[in-house]
Image 1 (cartoon, chains in turn purple, yellow, blue, orange):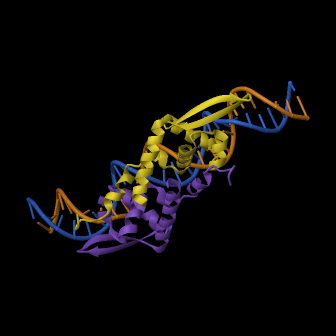
Image 2: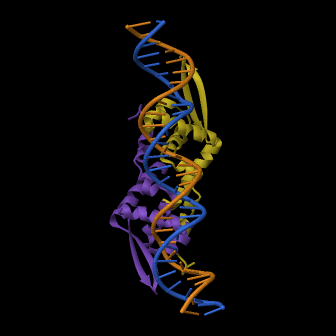
Image 3: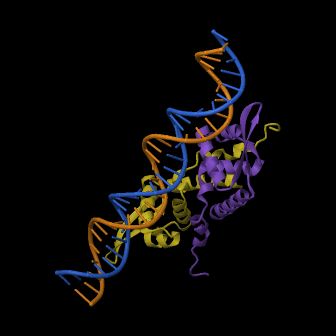
Length: 105
Length: 105
DNA sequence: CAAACAACTTTGCGACACAAAGCATTATAT
DNA sequence: ATATAATGCTTTGTGTCGCAAAGTTGTTTG
């Protein structure tokens, strides 16, 4: 592996990157949940700067993929949405992170 | 900064990420050119696994943004396209890289 | 000289991100 | 009591964009 040294093996992970996580808005959501374990809708909305509509549609997609768990409950007679990463979501984020780190290293 | 410790500052860079570079296909192109300084169209096509059409449209966008320089010349009576990063492209990639590393660190 | 090949470029379509509008419930003012 | 505003989301609509397929321009081969 001397004459064929190109460094190209290193960017192969990108070809199969998880686009669900790669999208900036969802990357923020995933990265945040990865750290705090659990957050509510409004707090996440302020932290990410996303509008309610965008946050809603992104969390729906992450939920459909099984990456996050969405728990809706009434607190003080008002709706309250709590989000947390699932095991699959945690694994997927770790995989994404490793792939990206390998390329940006 | 003890009670308000959230870690949220760390994912702010994502909100303003450079989407031109963030797109996986272009990230591969940029990451590759960042390392080798110069590559031809066909070689890059094989390295990235992109079709000619996709590579063409992506390099056009990177060129329009001033991130890469596209030099066309005839070699052996056949067209030959050489690509290389511009100074702006190099800076943009470094900025992208730093923003992502900060979040994935 | 026609048919195939090489090296791209352009076109067409489906997917998706974002913003604006909508909906359901609760709180507040009159 | 009834209207008005606010809260907490969800759904809809529009434009953008990535990808594959078809097209273009020039070259080599039978």
